[in-house]
Amino acid sequence: AQRVTQPEKLLSVFKGAPVELKCNYSYSGSPELFWYVQYSRQRLQLLLRHISRESIKGFTADLNKGETSFHLKKPFAQEEDSAMYYCALSGAGGTSYGKLTFGQGTILTVHP
Amino acid sequence: GAVVSQHPSWVICKSGTSVKIECRSLDFQATTMFWYRQFPKQSLMLMATSNEGSKATYEQGVEKDKFLINHASLTLSTLTVTSAHPEDSSFYICSAREAGGTGNQPQHFGDGTRLSIL
Image (cartoon, rainbow over all chains, first blue to last red; front, top):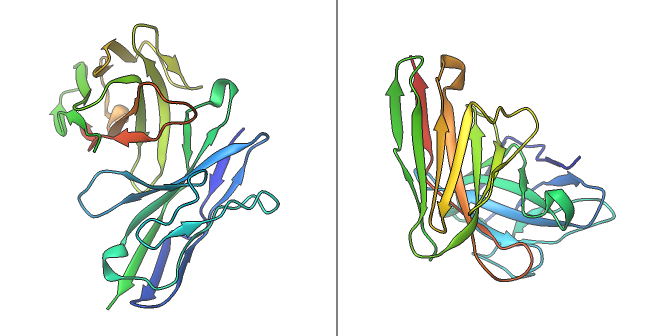
């Protein structure tokens, strides 16, 4: 079974401080990992995916297969980063291909 | 960008009523759409995968006769909650994945439908 764990429900930082949102996963094969973000009163939207290996809005995430983690990082948080962040996993094949399993979500608050 | 429209955004109805929720991809074709359920302060739980022109695939524990899914075109999937009861009250969210391409295409999400059964 595939599982995604986000240990922090709430995370508060001050503007300009580094931020790291933790995500650990459990999957027997080679997964694809995603970070989705939901800003206040907006729909869920894709922030980044591990296969793209790109930085979006200053955020990066590296897939660590040894630690089964996909932590989201940003060196200098901004107030507009305040949102709900979901880590999600999709199986690379078989019956779980294309299906997303979400973590519980982390509410990030960036204080001025 | 890819936009998914979900309608209605909020519905309140009496117990025993059937409720239909629509999910439309506005500017792209979606061979696959997904239906999620979200309880308060909890994560999204996948209910079923809707494939255009074929039967939906339901996740374990989801009653297919209770949650009827129809994906008749490449831009529309509907979820009908039949004979809804108070325990069906929840936030239902759909997503759509663009047709074509290789690998795991990203899913684009609708705004969700808040269903309240009295």
